[in-house]
Length: 477
Image 1: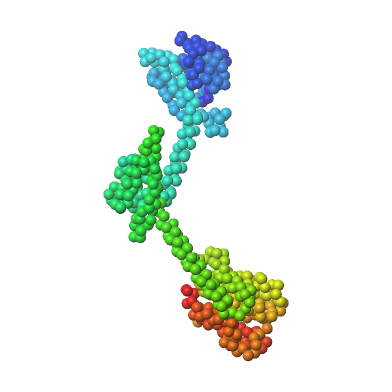
Image 2 (image 1 turned 45 degrees about the vertical axis):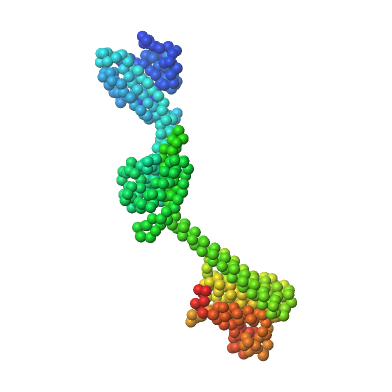
C-alpha cells in the first residue's frame, strides 16, 4: 500500500462521527471510508502522517490520492464480502526514511455496518500502525540469533543446553561429533543416555548438572574420553546455570573443550622447569668447584682469581643467553654461541695492550646445553690466557674453527700473539696451573681430549694451536 497524501478541503459527515475523543487522540492512523472509498473522517495522526490536515483529506477518494491496483482489489473484497482484512509488517517505500531502509506498517480494513448490509455498500474502518521500530528490532534479533547459532555450530567447543531434568534443549555439531553420532532432532532426549557417552563421564556430568541446578553456582571439571584413534583425550567441562525472570535456575548450559594439547604443553613446561632447575643446580656446583680449585690450588692473587672465576661464570651465563635468544630449551647452535661468547669475553679487554678481533668458523652443528657449557668454559680459559699472556698487538686475531668428521667434533683455537716457549712440545709441558687442570677435567667430561697441534709448533712463525676433540655422541649429554 502506498503512502497517504493530501487533498483539498471537502468535508462530509458520518452520522456517528467522533469528535475530539479517543478517535482523534489515538496514536494509530485511523480513517473511515464510505463504499466508494471516500474519506468520511480521519484522525490527526493519519493526517499528520499524510502531511496534510484532517479537513484536506475528508471528502477525497482514497485511490485518487494513492493509486494502487492491488490495494484497491483488497478494499473491494472487504466491501463486497464484509470480511475484514489485515496485513502485518508491510514494507512501505517512504522517501523520508530510505536511510533506514524504508518503513513497515500493520494495517487492518474492517467493515463497520454489520453483516446484514447490502453487498457493495456500507462503510470501512482503516487502521494503520507504524511498526518500523519493531520490525527493525526483530530483524536485528534474527541476525544476532543466526550469528550466534553460526558461531555455536562452527566452534570446536561442544555446547549443550539441558533443562534441570537433563533433557536436551540444544546441542551444536561439536557435541555430537564428540559423541560420535549424527545430530538429528534429539530435542527432549535425556542427555547422557546409555550408549551416548561413557558411564563414568555421564555419572560425573549428571552430578554437576544437579549441583548447578540446586545451587546456581557454575562448576568446572576435567575428564578423559577415548578418541577415534583409540588414544585418550582430556576434556574440560564448564557447567553454568541459566535463570528465569524469577531468579531460579531454568536450564543449564555446558561448554566442553578439548584441552589435550594444553595439558601436554603444561606437562612440557613442568618438565622444562625441572630441567632448568637441574641445570641451575649443576651450573652452581660447577662454579663452586671452579672457585675452590682457583682459590685452594692456584698461586694467583685473590683479585686475579676472582677475575678468572668471573670469566667462567660469564661463559656459563652465555649458554643461557643463547638458549633464551634462540627460544631453544635443549640445544645450542655452536657457531653463534661461540661468537657471542668471544664478544662478551673480549669486550672488557679492549683497553689492554692490544685490541682483539674474534673470528669464528663453524659447521652447522647443534649441541646440548651441557656440552655448550663445558666447551664454553674451555674457550673462556683459553681466551683469558690469550688476554693475559699472549702480548697481542693491535688488531690481534683470536680464531676458533669447528669441524665435524668421522663422528668427532674438532675445535681449534689459536691467537695472533707470541708463541709458546720452544721447550713446550705438548700440553703436558705447560705449567701445571689451575687453568690446565680445568681444561683437562672439562675435556674428560666431554669424553674427549685437549692437546697442542705439534705441526704448528714446528713452525716457529705461528703461535700454538690448541685442539679440542670429543665424539659427536656427546651432543646428547
